[in-house]
Image (cartoon, rainbow, N blue to C red):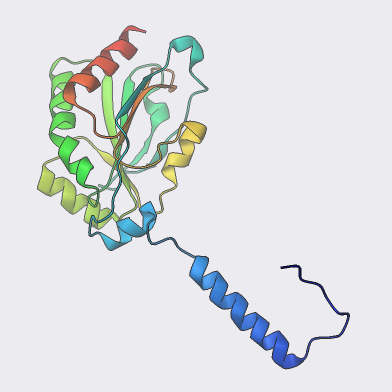
Length: 205
């Protein structure tokens, strides 16, 4: 339907009605009940869709510029990925207590984390607790006995540091090389075997 103005001024009543309609429309579009953010707020784990498990390895010559990820850990300490620059490969894992697949992969992440520590490999792990309060995230960490640190990200903005390489939803795991460039990633649940392989390949590259 084509709308056109008649050139006549709107009455006060018409203006008021138009304003109310606009407010209702804005309210209806302000949030998507199926979005990751809304699911996180509900915390009921219903309707969640995880990544497809795609694994990507990026050759050194094709890696983009280094990223800088920084924030506050669940225990209140400041951390920046630049602290590992030139020294360590960094495993970044995006998770949330409201994400069922994230719970599934924790034992594998913990296993590999324990292994690299025991072998004294130049590798560090950092989680990103996505879209929930630090209090809730800390309680979950304690329950699941997660020993690697995590950044708190209730607002969901930390992943913007990855630019066009940003993960779309948890669980997602990204591997940064010693220069701070994304060298590999898994969209979905990562197994211990896959994670070991990705880490070793980046260490050797």
